[in-house]
Length: 160
Image (cartoon, rainbow, N blue to C red; front, side, top):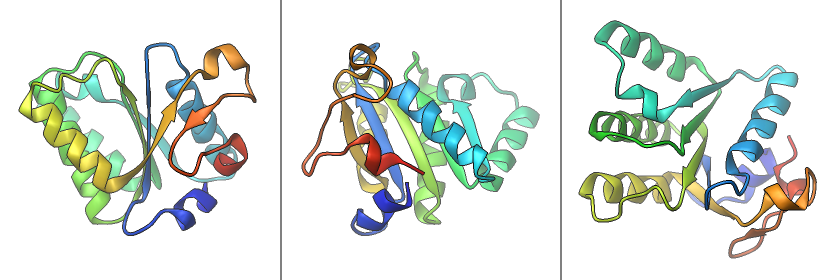
């Protein structure tokens, strides 16, 4: 993963894994998080859709945990309401501002591009993360997923 961050231009300190439903973005993020945890790096997995339903106390705990984690994995593949979109946007902004690593999983079909909140979140993600289109990891097996991006990205590039 350090290789990905070293080759990423500017202040981008994250990966945006996106693709269609069932293509393997979540699974790839889980593999990266497990490997990081195995090396002693604190990786925190947050379901972005669940951020919208948190009360003030639980949200405060979640924010504190997000700040402590070395790598934040945001799963934004589920249906997200307005509060969840806003809180996800805030987390991405904070991580980007302080150049903290993050991995964001996004279902390309779930984004409502007609909604200004989604467009704002996607614009911020494009500034803070290197986008990786996950084409079909699920059907290619554990090691053989194909990704489409400018330079191309293989599993070897994502090794941590």
